Length: 322
Image (cartoon, rainbow, N blue to C red):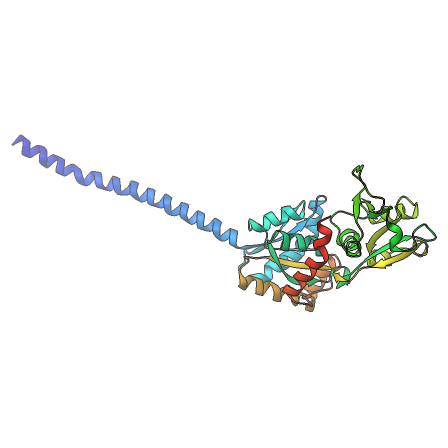
């Protein structure tokens, strides 16, 4: 009898335990669902951005501010989602930018021909999409110049002398001119490094770090010749123009490019292309382009992506080896 009573009492207690268990289970399930929702929200936030990559070692805050309206315009047009945004990521070098593209932290970028060649072809991180008319120009070229009435009157006179370039990463102020001379049989020696076996027939070179200093070095005969872009020459005052002689000019190349990472979703690439190609056709777009390095417009690559890639390789591959 006592045993039966004990069993009955235990049975009576069971209903009181199950509600407590259900409450705990519900709490745990709720926590799991909340965590999953948060994770999904983070994933959605990650996919609701488009990131522009740029290269600069200095003034990053100012550069980001300079391009903010442009990338906001692109982000706003790229999606109808209200929280979709454009972002900017600045890398200190073309190599670092290529790494960011490979890590999918950058979706598209704008650069001049030589850094574009490095990122797209040497690193294989991105592909050409459009030409950018930066500073109102579709194309530009490099000029090799010297001081009037100096010891250099033709390119052959550069052997055994020093040529000054603007910047190691410059297309028009370095690589176009170097590639041009390499194809003509000239050999180069870096004069910032001591070489006891340097040949007197080689062309020594140094970097000025600025276009103004480059010109001053040539005029002061600290270098036999220099290289800069045709638009740099056009901006010189008449006094300096009359003091120099142009020895040679290179072929023209596009002034600037816009490229996208290779695995960027094709529908987004197509929409991005349409947005940029039509940007100059509306008042807001024209204003933002004007305030972004005096850009006139974006247009299609004149030779197509594959042909332009081959052309850049032909121009810059020899220069990149020296």
